[in-house]
Amino acid sequence: MVNQIRFLSIAALSVAALCLSSIAMAQTDTAPTLSLSVNKNPVASGDTFILTLTVSELIEDREWRPAEVLTEFDVMGTSSSSTTQIINGETSREKTFRSVVRAPQEIGDYSIGPVALAGGESNQITLQVVAADAAELTEQRDAFMRVEIDRDEIYVQEQVELTTKLYLAANLHSGNIIPPQLEDADIRQVGRDVDSTEVIDGRMFQVFQRSFVVIPQRSGAQEIRGPVFQGQINVESNRTLFPSFSSTKSVTTAATNLPIEVLPIPAGWPAEHTWLPAELVTLSVAVGNEGTQQPDGETLQITQGEPLTLTYRLTAVGPLADQLPRLDELVRQLDVGDASVYPESPESAMNQRNGRLVSQQTLQVAIIPHSPGTLTVPALQVPWFNTQLRQQQMASAPAQRIEVAPGSTTGRIAPADGPDRGPISGDAAQQSQPGSQSATAGDTAEGMAEIRNLQLWQALTGIFLLLWLLTLAWLWRRRKAPVSNQEPSTTPAPRQDLKAIKQACLSNDAAATERALKEWMRIHLGLAGQLDALGDYLGHAPLRSQLAHLQRARFAASPQDWQEGKALWRALKSALQGFNEPDKATNKPRLPELYPPS
Image (cartoon, rainbow, N blue to C red; front, side):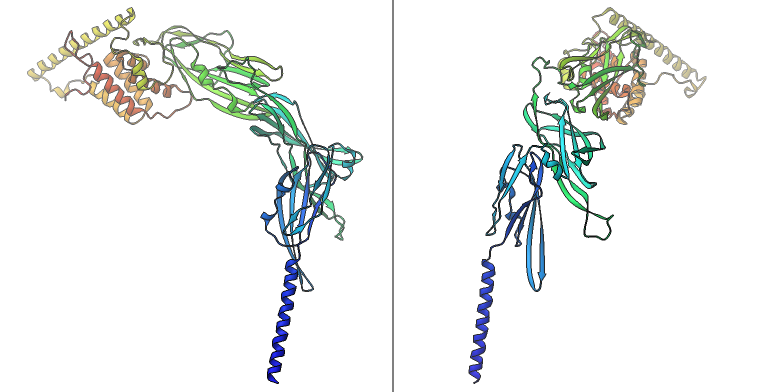
C-alpha cells in the first residue's frame, strides 16, 4: 500500500513538472509583439517627427539600430524606456524606443517597416511627406519652423545671416533650439530673441525669432542643415477636476535645409595680403599714450631720442577677430627712416552691434627718432573686400609728419646698417655684421669729429688726474692734512659703475639698468642719448640686440616684464673685452679695464 502511494506521488510530480516545462517552452517560443507609430502624418519636407517602436519584451538597447532601417531618413537621436506590470498575478514587460527623425527634402510617400526584431515583426507605416507650406499641415501642427538667409551665394569666410522663426500654437513650457549646422563653418547666434504673435489660417501662433551668422571656411556647393526645436508645450488636460490646470506635451520640429554656393577668393586678390571680406572696414591712428587723435595736416613736435607712441585701430564689421591681418607685421614693413620702431603684440576683441559681428584689433607702436629733422611715418593700408558692393577697397591710416628737434647733447654715432627695426638674435646679428666693428662711424666727418672730441676729453681727463695725484702726493709728504680729509672725487670709479650695471642687470631691473648704462656712457665714453649709441660705438652685434630689447621694454606703452639682464651683462662684458685691446699707436687700452686691480 505504501509503495503504491509513493508511486502515485512520484507520477503526479512528474506530470506537474512536465506541464510546467510545456508552459515555459510555450512562453519561450512565443515571439514578442512589435508596434510602429509616428506622432504626425503627413509631415513637412525636412521637418522632424518621432518614430516610436514598442516591443512586448525587455530587450537590449543595442538590438534596435534605427539608422540601419531608416536609410532614407536622418535619425537625430534615440531614447528608450522600460515598464513592468503585474495584473492578477500575470506579469507583462514592455520596451519602448523613441527616435527623432528628420523627413527627406523630396515630397512623396515613404514606407517605414516592417521591422524584424527579437524574433518578431512589426507593422508597416506609409509616411506622407508634403511641402512645408501645405495647407493641410496648418490645422494639425502645434509647432513648426521657417528659415531664410539673406543671400545664397557668398564668398569663402564671408558672413551670411540666417533667420529662423519658431511657431507654437500653445504656450511654451520649456524647450531648446539646436543651431543650424554646416561642416567647416563658424556658426554663432547674434542679437536677442524676438517674441511676437501671428495668425495663420485662423489659428493664433506664438512666434520666436532667432538670428545666426554662418561663416563658411571652404568653397563649393554646400547645404546648411536647418535648426531643430525640441521642447514641451502646455495643453489642456481632461484628467483633472481643475480646468485651470494643464499638462505638457512633447513636440519636435525642424526647419528645412538651405543650399548655398560658396565662391573662392577672387583671382585678382593680392597674394601678399590677408583675405578680408567684410561689410565695412576702418583703420585709424592716434598719437600719444592717451590715444589723442592728431588733426590731419598738423605736424608733430618731438625731441631727438624721445619716444613717441602711435596707436593703430582696425575695425571690421562681419569677419571674426582671428580673420583680421596682424597690424604689427604691416608696421614692420613701413620705411620710417632714421628711427627705431618697436611694435607691441596687437590686442583683439569682438562683440555684437545691431545683430552684426564687429571685430577690432589695436596696436601700439613706440617710435624713437635718432636724428633731428623731419621724420615721416608712411600711411598704413589694409586691403579688404566689400561684400555689399562686391569689390576690393582699401582702408588707410594717414601718414604722420614729425619734426624732430635736436637733443640737449649729442653723442650717438649712427649705425652703418640703418635704423633698428626690431629684435635681432645674437647669432643672426653676428652673421650680418662685418668682421671688424671698431670703427662703425669712421666713414663720416661727424663721426671723426666726435672721435677727436672724445680723445681730447680723455687726454684732458688724464692730465687732470695726473695733476690731482701729484697734489695728493705733495700734500702727503707735507703732512698738512690726512688723505681721508680730502674731498672725494665726484666722478665714480669705473669699477663701481660696472658693479652698478651688473647689479641692475642681475636683478632684471630695466629702469635701473638703463640709468646705470647711460651714466657709464656719459662719464667714460662721453656718449649721450639712447642706449643704441653704446652698441654702435662698441660695434658689438649681440650687445646692440640686447640694448634694443631693453629699449622696447622701457618704451612700451604698457609695462613689460624684462628678464634678459644676465644676457645683457654677458654681452656687455664680451663687447668691452673685445674693444679694450691695447691701441697699437699708444699701446694703451681704449677703455678703462673691466675689472681694474684694487
